[in-house]
Image (tube, rainbow, N blue to C red; front, top):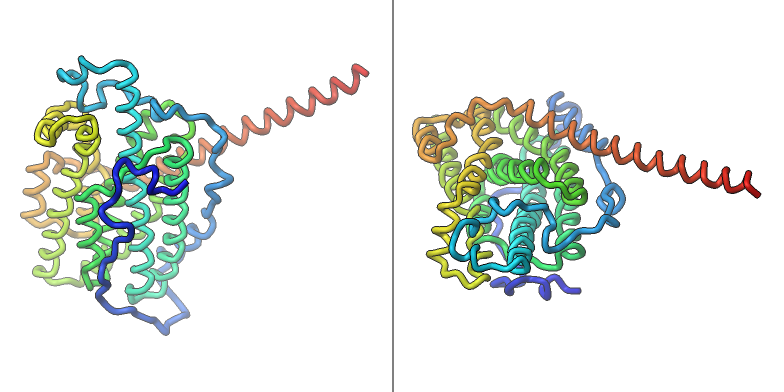
Length: 368
């Protein structure tokens, strides 16, 4: 079935074209590179996986409760609209919310794939080109698995959110080679990681938990790559150049914060846009969710050297300034450990099933 048949409403355009600017850069230095980046490149090669095989696609998913979403997490909870809804209506709402969330993940991953390819093209250093090539493959795999989940398990997609589209467009239109790093690796990937993690850690559904855990294992490397490359480069920039990038971060963070309302979902349930925005703004759960989503971005921005007065004031205004003290390395290590633990549990269960099958065959043979 064509994806366009599954969209809740047709996207404005079938293909989105962004005029490319900036130079393609070649490096003729093939001998050495930065040890940290080359080690990350090796890890990127070693950790490749097949989305068709590593994920247990035979697991059943209830499209009307694909994530085990608690009532309190939906912005209509506690409103007059919620009180009027039947159980079937609430199941339909859960389906739409999951579709909306994973659709934005899917569109973001395609954006990440394009940005990683742009970094391969434009970054001046060969070691960074090498790593970005592995990331391009990672992002293609992520788009593949999110697309398959939406197609096969939920059967519904939402078009790209306007604010996510705006940030992607700004990132890709900029001719400076570091902007795909900053827009994608730091802002969009950082926010996505926090969103993935919140769902991964709260869902009781095994298939989405697998998908999110394995994607996050890759994303931990991607954010590390952005931090390494930008930290080195931003040490060389003037105060004026750093302020330009801080302004980009401020605008991007406000865009991403406003992206997370899910107003499109409520509009599809007949709720006027202004009232839908009010429901989302007044939801205690979503207020906490929006705040926690910056847990990966703020310490990363601070780490790469963008921490001017205007940026700090913006984070105070958003209520996320204190997150600058979070231990990003520890968060990333936990992401990798969770995926490895999930693998170990799955392999142990599969091995146990194989052993039981062999024992049953032996017992059957002895009984003849």
